[in-house]
Length: 441
Ligand code: HSE
Image 1 (tube, protein in one colour):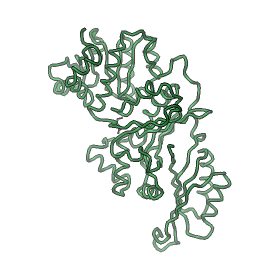
Image 2 (cartoon, protein in one colour; image 1 turned 180 degrees about the horizontal axis):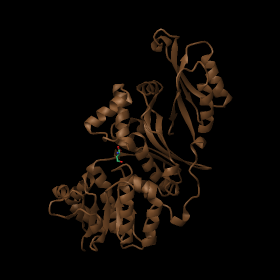
Image 3 (tube, helix red, strand yellow; image 1 turned 120 degrees about the horizontal axis):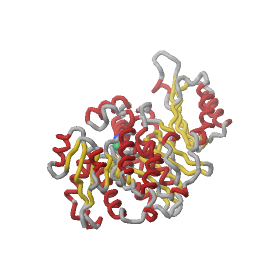
Image 4 (cartoon, protein in one colour; image 1 turned 30 degrees about the vertical axis):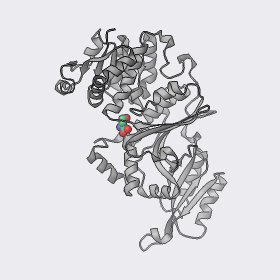
């Protein structure tokens, strides 16, 4: 049978990986897919750079629309990234009857509903394994492997840049700004790392996973997002003393009243496997009612790891493109007419536990006032750690100390009210640090 023809829009590091892995493993891939898969056309504004990656093996064009216009192309791979141009091109490709494979998490988290509906109406597939956690087949696992389960929650380290920074902060006892500069120098962080360090990239991925896990539409605008820029080395150290590591987690949980969807620095017990995922690696834990807890680990970025996911989608599309669209796996795992109306819960309604660090005057009764506020709010304390005052005493001033409190689960809104009261105490001398904590058991 004639090989399926693929056009890659935005040929760069990942596209080069797709090209190379397809070339290297072509025989294995053909045996799996039932026919050959060939990249026959690629686009990149800088044609010479694209030519350097693919040589004469594919037609190179500057305009990605030339790929969409080519009737020989069966599948379009979108690797341009970003929201606007990518959205236009993907919708045009769908309108032209092409199947689409994309690694673009931002696009799907924000415009997924429109794109999946357009694909459904046209009877084509949009596949996006590479959009979440790079080479880890987490989309496949959530959508197919765990399909028997009522998913209860998932939690993932889904941004390698921030996990690398947090690992370095912990290993070397350095503050965020110092490690970020070093990460940029070494090429682990982008020159503009905003999307990574502010948690936006992780929130895109968590949004996509929450939709597939719970059968809800993608709703990036409802995700709570907090990055790692305010984390200090002291909190990482105190967390460690209490048996926790701090990770930037994307969390989505099913509750009776709705779905939690949030990204924030999180204390995770050091003994959990996911707490030991270091450097730029990614990992996702999924809790299903039948299977229990499952963990997926691997490289979340990079040329060939991401290509591995893109090619898995190419094989899927190749196998299924002649199937009746009704018999394909739905884009978001659930049939489009069977989506759940459960809302994404506002952050005030989220239930979690907390790490609090208070800089206080080292006087009698200070701790009693703080714990009194927590008790009055019915927030149960799990552990308290108080530093020796002389370790942290301000030069020439009143003795001060850090008090660290771990709480049990409570509503975020209740915690916010208690925090405001604690902050107002004259003996609390600096803004209180609050980091959420997940036991993940
Ligand atoms: N910038 C991402 C990361 C990879 O650091 O994990 C692409 O989503």
